[in-house]
Amino acid sequence: MTAWEAILLGLVQGLTEFLPISSSAHLRIVGELIGSSDPGAAFTAITQIGTEAAVIIYYRKKIGAILVAWFKALTGANGTGWRARAGLGPRPGSVDIRHSRPGVTANHDAAMGWYIIFGSIPIVLLGLLFQDYIETTLRNLWITVFTLAFFGLLLLLADIFGRQERELTSLTGRSAITFGLAQAMALVPGVSRSGGTITAGLAMGFTRKAAADYSFLLALPAVLGSGFYQLFKTLGEPIPAGAPGWGATIIATIVAFGVGYAVIIGFLKIIGNYSYKPFVFYRFALAGFVVWLLMSGTIEPHGGIV
Image (cartoon, rainbow, N blue to C red):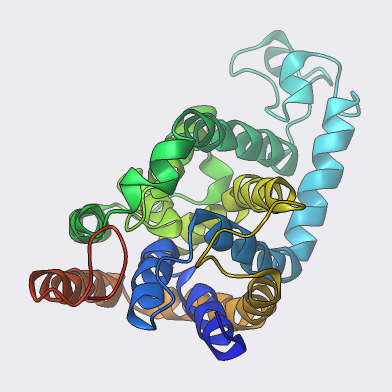
């Protein structure tokens, strides 16, 4: 892979990571079209470190507040019971509420920290259990075509029929796990991590902005963990034939960071004024384009330009 190809793939990663259109699918498709073949799951995971660094910088104040509140609650600053350490506050109808006693103190940021941890468990477990399939079988482009179209349809329905009235202050453990399960589906190229979690959020009645914000925050542990796991896993190992080298991977990661930061700002402004429909129609068009490439024999489903 040349430096220019690495820059192009970094642009693709940065442009598509936060949009509900699947960055892994785009890297898979663009890699084929430029003649570099499938960049691979390791390249995808490592370049995502760049885009997640953009999330950390953009949400630095919120992330800092969550970490501080979570640690204080964990160490008993809000009370010593399990609800206090979880940031949940007193149970409705409890003795403390009925008699106006000072007791458990609720802290939304502390609870958010726990919700992000619990919501990250599904993708970690499924990623480890099905790692071989994720890196091989599930990267078949026919599967990508299906996931682009099907999950695009789900996003459309959720955007149209979702109540869009809940904010993140109404997040519960049950909804956090639902977000996490939706994120785990993005292990399959074409689903879209942000698309899956945003769809789940809209279906549960969250606003577009709330669903997007939580999607970006929820991704941090899983995506950074996956990226650094692949990074340390490949250190010291010979680079497989046809796989991107370290130079290309580093270039793509840096480019993805810069572009990703700009996309976060633009995306949040767009969804504040418009619906997700343009992204849905783009997913349908991309799925159709990939079908044409496959049917015409231009590319092979398992990799390689004919």
